[in-house]
Image 1: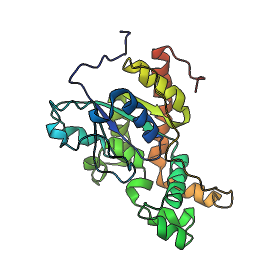
Image 2: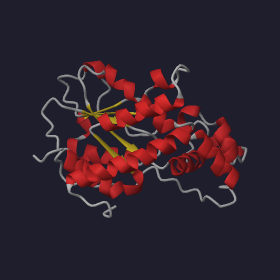
Image 3: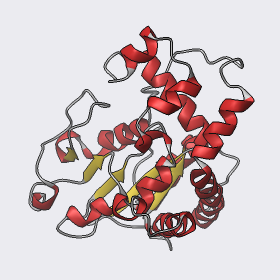
Image 4: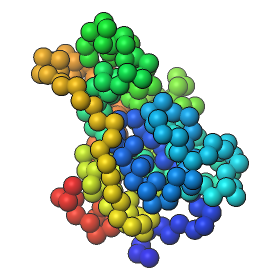
Length: 253
């Protein structure tokens, strides 16, 4: 094993902190191909229609052969486990993530907002007002910071961002959607896994026009995701450091 790599032992497991619209589903399915469906604990989720693995409580996974736990939770969810997991996650440019989320809602009938968005012809600027804040307001910072802290007024934005950055340094692995192929190669290297293969999943098909993405909309997205933008810029630098540590090359996106 090289410095920086992790050799998973028999009872070790990964907690995939899945942030929506960051290519996480594709990454998750790549891991499932290696570990197998029955080694996955995927808690109830409207995003994945396939029911992977059993549905044990996170506190009772010992002895069940679980290798991956995946859910759209926040960082503080790791407290639910009987022992610390190796946490992994994916991040994405905030503007691209919000646009992808909007496209996804428009094209997936099972989403709770789909009918309203389509029937009322709701554009992106109005969508930002009606979508859950958890998905549109600094969602990546929120999830990495943890709900218990992020939702408390006694913490300033700077403090919340600092905590999210610290937690990002603590996760065993994270990737960037903008460098997805490289991210999977880094994941393979980190845990000494076979090469990961992936499919394009949950990709929206709605065409997005320049008329929809006005400067006003861009400014609104930026205002609602100012912490996420700072977190993402920090993540880009940290990702480059981890790629360098692995011996991979950044240009091999």
